[in-house]
Amino acid sequence: MLIEVLQAKIHNVRITQTELNYTGSITIDQDLVDAAGLLPNQKVLIVNNNNGERFETYIISGERGTGIIGLNGAAARRGQVGDELIIMTFGLMEYEAARIHEPRNIFPDRNNRLV
Image 1 (cartoon, rainbow, N blue to C red):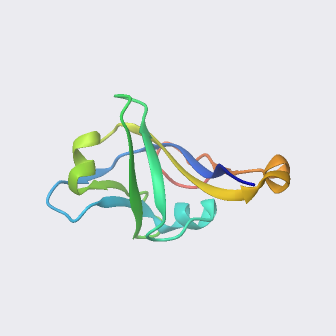
Image 2 (spheres, rainbow, N blue to C red):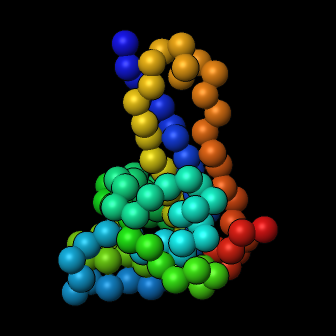
């Protein structure tokens, strides 16, 4: 049996930009993408701690070292610059593997950079 478990989480990053007139997605600093073991175009669940919004989108790589977290397209309506987000992704695993799986949790600093 396969079950869905948390693969990785980028915890409490802040939105640095919004771009409504874009095709959609979330732009994430490539350093954070790599640290969390994520991939461009991977589906993510976003939770906005400021307004309670929860939504799904996909990752676009942002410039390394910039701390960029950008909501694009319709997602730009789900938050504003300065809001704190949790970005999560999930994967399917066999039950026994899931029992011992440890998700990768990333806790960037207040400027969305690795510590």
